[in-house]
Image 1 (cartoon, rainbow, N blue to C red):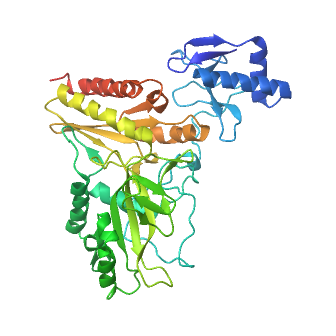
Image 2 (cartoon, rainbow, N blue to C red; image 1 turned 135 degrees about the vertical axis):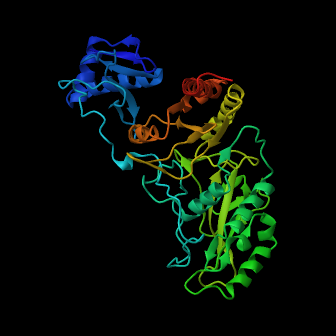
Image 3 (tube, rainbow, N blue to C red; image 1 turned 30 degrees about the vertical axis):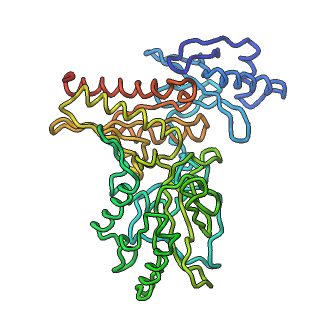
Length: 444
């Protein structure tokens, strides 16, 4: 017996005809005519359009849980049912949807390339056989649809590490943001304090150029050329450009409306979502080197990291994360108001966290502290209903729960109404408030 159910509470949401129930069963079993398959696809489409799941009557557990399957559509347009595990009941052994419960999907099903903090010198490979690397699809370290598990560009990893060291990926209540010139200067100061090196004895802070005028005025060229005269053997002379840009194309970036345009020889990479770039602004980083066969230094390769805004250089992987961050700021203000003797901080992790079950990379972490007691909460923005995306979450969500209670925000609700983002943020706020009341014994 199959019926449509509301995915929020699994309450009945519509009946299927006897013929529809038959074709769902036959097609799931791998049989049925072409007409049966067409009718089965129409049932799946109807469920997707109405935001429903399919409840299965093969069994029920004592607590009322029942087995369910979710309607999915692959990137090639194929419609099918996906068995949901996790907190949902298993399908009975004789059911057409029966499978081993809570199987660990392959790592390749995860939604973003592996992100590990880089080690060694703040440098990127410049040993390109033919002088310049071929420009691949402009994918980077975000949810790009690129081969899962692939390595993100070295430039992106270096940039994120410096942003993390400068704590640009963190927000605290009362933080009103800063002009970009201030936090760009803070990145250079951090590199100087930590004595970050490009090569032995070559400090990044001396070859870090945070203003487009430094490049267009050729001051950066002169500084790199001067440093290269006695560069350590075995290392490639290089310097780095870094500033906020709003326009990115295959081979250039611009500060605004074509102004401050900088050419990038091998191309600019950036995160793509469904083949489309995340909207601006971006924090651009470019590596400057000497192309083979040429005498002048040029910007060889670039990466554009989306950030929340010019005043808040918090890295994000999607427009949905940017919206989520803005409502989570309100969450922190409410938490601070309800627990004035506690401190709170919102973090955007940029590298994977290790857990007993394996690595994971949450979208956001909310840190709470009162006295010596510390608590941590995980927030995930659920951006897709693709099967490979959801399978990846089945693997990583249990890992995230080792870091702290997990709260999800449905990105589909962000665009459903003018208050969709606020409503999703309120759910997170209410959940954390409840946990903290239980932990700390009430508010104020």
